[in-house]
Amino acid sequence: MAKSWVFEIFSYPYDPDPEKFDPQLCKELYDWKLESWVASEGFGFDGVLFSEHHFTPYSISPSPNLLVATLAQRTSTMRIGVMANITAFHNPRRLAEEAAMLDYLTDGRLEWGLGRGVDEPEFLREGVKMEETRDRFEESVALMQAAWRNPVFTHKGQYYNYDSVSLWPRPMRPELPIWVTALSPNTVAWAARNNFKFTSVFAPTSEMRSIFEGYKAAAAETGREASPEDMGVCRNIVVAASEQEAREVAEPAFNALFAAFKEAAVFHDLDNVPQGYEHYQSFFRPFAGEGVTFEDLCSLGIIVVGTPESVLDQLVDQVETIGCGNLLNWGSFGNMTKKQTMSSYQLYGEHVAPALRSLKA
Image 1 (cartoon, helix red, strand yellow):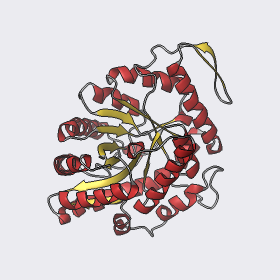
Image 2 (tube, one colour; image 1 turned 60 degrees about the horizontal axis):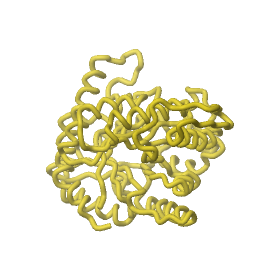
Image 3 (cartoon, rainbow, N blue to C red; image 1 turned 90 degrees about the horizontal axis):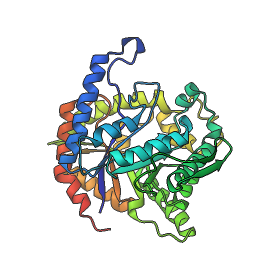
Image 4 (cartoon, rainbow, N blue to C red; image 1 turned 120 degrees about the horizontal axis):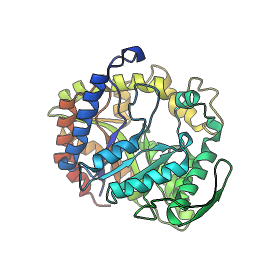
């Protein structure tokens, strides 16, 4: 089976000039986005996952944990989580405390995602050295797990030090389900060795299969057999009554998203990336110029648009090719409207999600 999740960045789709920020438009955006997440439970989605980004209109979700707490009070069955908190921007003790609180506020429905981060403009503006992110990431995760499991914990690390302290509260579950955003082989292997789930975005279907094979191999080295449940793939998905309508919605929306993404995420000098991010030179290069088109991304499986029938066919092919058990539907992006979002979510929930859920492992 393959579970279906709503994935949300979400962008401020109006004038990007900071001087022209409109609080009323932002309030309306928060309101209808929240309405769409609540509706997704009724549409049959398995959960909602929020992201963390800073400093640009690419995203107005700098504190996704607040969204988790808000949505938890308006839903009852769906899983709710973050994909992902960027550990280098936080004190891990504080993140561990917030996760513990959210485990109660969601009544055990929390899915906890963590990432080392890859968007260079954010690190430059925050003043965090990207060369440190892997060490910070791995140390932060270890500290959080120790804080959750132990009534009293001590941590002596490179970046953080605590001596005989306790979390109040500790989570309902001592083993919170941890997800990791990953694409580089090192992070994928690390996630597998630590029994963490992982997910990726913007990678072609064929590449995602290879990435998951690497995950399974690393898990096997620890004596664990990885399953489809361990992996998720994120896709921009638009479902409409006709192929033409789906494309008329998706193409301009993705073009708006793509413009914001290039500004917010892509390395400024791909020939000289920070140490530890060499893998992303080839990953980001197609996005840095004008060479990648909407058609290219559709053919690579990164964007999936069409009628419920054609979208289902495309996603079944991806799930079976990759071997993943989680499909993250980044289905409201760019300048998509409330009406377009709700219609696409409803069609997906009624016609696509049930069929994916019934797939044989």
